[in-house]
Length: 296
Image 1 (cartoon, rainbow, N blue to C red):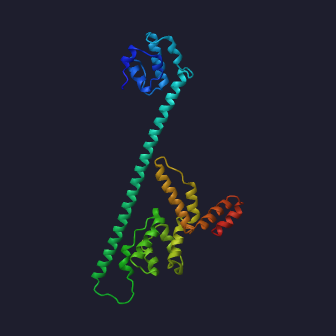
Image 2 (spheres, rainbow, N blue to C red):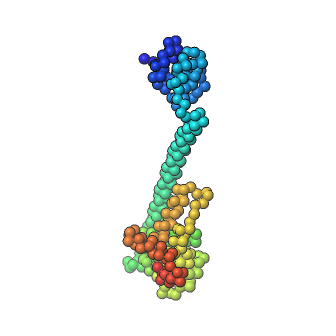
Image 3 (cartoon, one colour):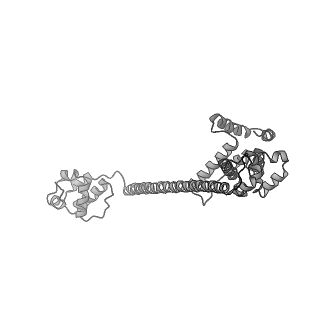
């Protein structure tokens, strides 16, 4: 049976009042037009109702014994504010989690889009190669490779993204089945800046070796293991970066360091790398220089 505040006040019962639930006390407080909040604790609402009923002589002063005054008003207010603060923090945390998930989803979509573009570019290159072959009137039966015809398919060299350039070049060269002895010939046609200077300075026997050319160019742009290690250790978050972007950049630098050290996703290699780095932090600088000269 639903609680009737008006009916209860006509025949108030002290024992019955003491057993009222919070919902019933709220109805009673509303009926009495008290200044209160539903979010208040039950005992606070009960105390307000008792004061009102005793003042109106609806209940005897004996009802005052039902009040609980163990916690002063200031403490109760403080507890209420702390409770509201916790609810607000929880709400903010949920919003942050939602935004983070939304950002991660957008990043995944961007990566998928980039991968799709790369696949399309590769397909275009293959189609162009097929067209070139079909338009050639004379096909040699030998394994002759026409470097001049393929040079225009070499990706443009950019000094700002040297570390990403070689994997891109290798992917195209392998997909189009370019003979490896011609790789350096193809590269020198697009090299510029430091890369062009390094290639020109190499002896002829080294300039025709792809791995040597690649290593010398990377070294010139400070893209060797030690440089990657220092970049990874010293990289800090920019104000304009989100934490997701910062974490991804940090991870990318770490992967480049490991790749340059050829750890090959092997735990023992990784363990040796970290221990060696820690050891070098503890030794004299002369010994550090010895390690550096030996590429340790």
